[in-house]
Amino acid sequence: MKKREVQASVKDERLVKKRRDQMIKGAVTLFIQKGFHRTTTREIAKAAGFSIGTLYEYIRTKEDVLYLVCDSIYDQVSDRLQKDLDTNQGTLESLKMGIADYFRVVDEMQDEVLVMYQEVKSLSKDALPYVLKKEIEMVEMFEQIISRCVENKEFDLTEDRIKMIAHNIFVQGQMWAFRRWSLKKMYTLEEYIELQTELLFQGIRKPALSRTGGE
Image (cartoon, rainbow, N blue to C red):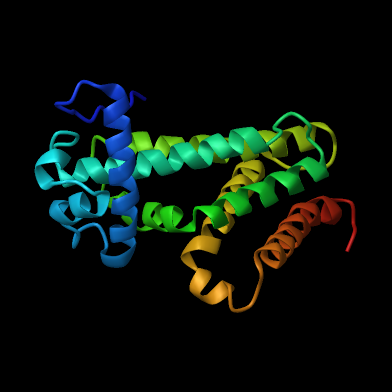
């Protein structure tokens, strides 16, 4: 799916990137505090450190800012996952490490992930499919690891189960961000990773045990 282009009147690409990065950082803080709909473009410009006139040299609408925020967040998470995940090993250890790495990325970017979770629904109809496709691509990284584990006889799973487990991992990582107000009262990040991984592996192994008559 083709990337949605956000028009800018400035032609210097390096300056466009610099200003938009400032804009994204300021917008994330405001969206956390007030939400997308209650935040004004004037407030975004002020948080970014420039005038409203300058803001409109790099975007056309407030919805453009939201798109840039979501696109940037998905890119950052995806880039980190691609560096950290080994989708080829297909071992229990590689899957455990992949889950832990992903949860740590979410912890480091929890404000950004919270904005993404809360505000992605406000994207325009032409922008939403592209952004959601990027999320599916991240889920597919976990599908690849789990599929390799199945090929290596670590698990006995159908294709449907592989897909569901990959989605569960992705959502459990996000949950650390959007339920942090409650979870951090009970667990450290490492305790959360350990418990979620333990529960996940229990769920994966149980079907295979039941088919062989195990308890």
